[in-house]
Image (cartoon, rainbow, N blue to C red; front, side, top):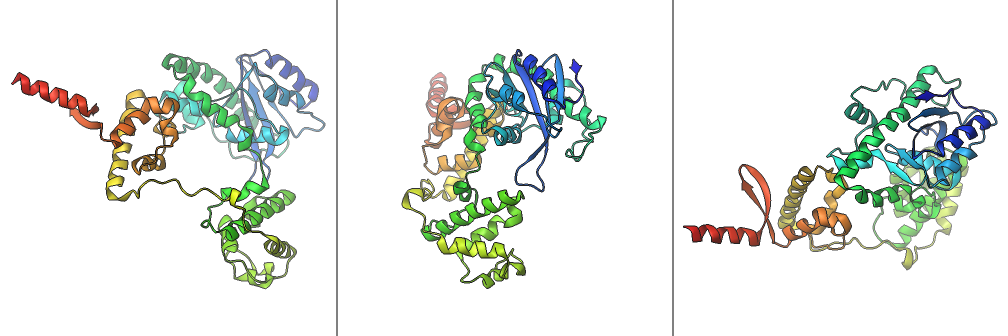
Length: 400
């Protein structure tokens, strides 16, 4: 594989992207810094196909990344392959307002062909290629220039290894016939709505303090205000105010600015500083949340209770058996809270739709409704239908 020198000019980038546009797939990774900023700072982007690989310096003077974004977001013929690519996709969205498409995530794919739960990149490489990745450069300062040879070599390795692994994963995926299972998961990953920073929706990320319209109205207003402050200053939103503090103020709003010093998580400076003044103005103008924006009541069936909890435990056991039988990560099938909801009587659940219903949900529902049972045969724990058990029992009695 040809490894190019670090790309620092628009012409070199355009030439690279023109060649890569003829590929069936490209593997992509990014290095970024976000510990001290609201927006992740893209410091390096690596891309490869089966023949060549390059690292691109987005901080180089005068470089225009348009050819790269065109390849990523406009070219529907080239599959973009990531590993645990959520944050990489977010960065592309921040630059373009679009997401890479079509897209494939090897971490998600591994869940469909093995029992690996969110396998890390180093373990992926060791599993498929049989060697250990040097992670020494992983936590270096990627924003510092010039980049060292060790940094670039480490970064390039992320995409060159992945370009060898992806075809192997794809081959196994095709043999199992589970490609269709992943379509919905990849669509979720590429959905731009996942990456939009809509300040008016920021309150939904905060644990809601009940369903009081006035409290939720203040929570929405404060969350939107915090997003604006953090974006303007380009600092993490938690540096402005932690979620817990924001929810506390929404539930127990101070009557005057001096009372902010009584709020846990705020310093005495909030008594008379400008940001404190802006916060108080937001509180003064906050309106109760309209009915059409109120969160839905939690969808629950009957209270779970002791018996329901036992049923949920049986469902978890069933999940272990099924995931082992078909060699799939349990996390890809369902979650614990979903099984508890099923045990409590809820029936509108992802587990009861599409391929998940065929693979696991159907049996889970039959177990809850008393048509499926566990049995031990030849020392193995199996699932069996009640009707089949009765037939076998009747046959055994007749034989006697």
